[in-house]
Length: 215
Image (cartoon, rainbow, N blue to C red; front, side, top):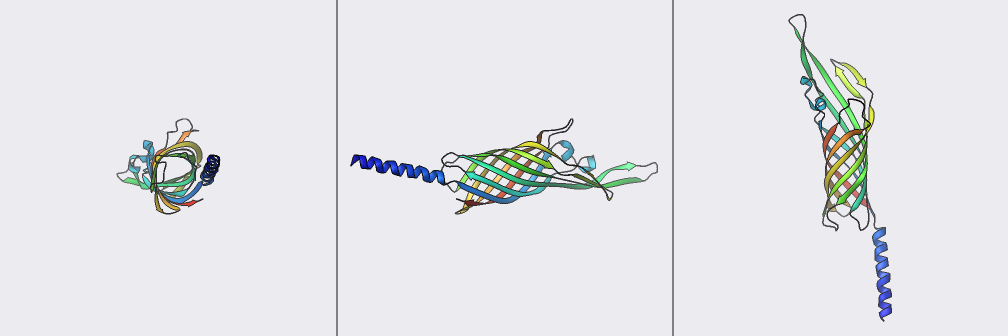
């Protein structure tokens, strides 16, 4: 009887482990939010002061996660599109006459960011919400920089750089298999691969993703 009990317990234990291993959860999310450009100063300075005047703009994208059994580490990947634009008048130019002329300008640029990293969950059991810390390596494609000066458009070719993102978020369960992922992150878009004199472009993002979970 004792041997049968041990065998049954062993079988149950093995089946339990196998079930947990098989129960990997794949999540796909769509959403977006705000990107607040933080630096360098040239990016955030007002157009009237000779800067680009970039501030808060919308972003949108997709994110995917794979929930691993037992351990609180979740691999993740995302694609996020950031679009920046501004407009204004450059400081007036004093001509030889007494007239002062103002120059109207518009600036725009985009960043397509590909991220791959992990997130660490603080709560190892289902609780309706799951706060986490994340670390992502990013590949960022800076689109062509466009400037329109008094109706005349000029553009500069884009470039690609590697960066880093640190984040803090939480997933909140709405109904079974559907969560809300609220995320705040700090980005360095061009940590490596910079040319001489190129300053680091940084931004804060605040995003909300609707997550669909698949077993």
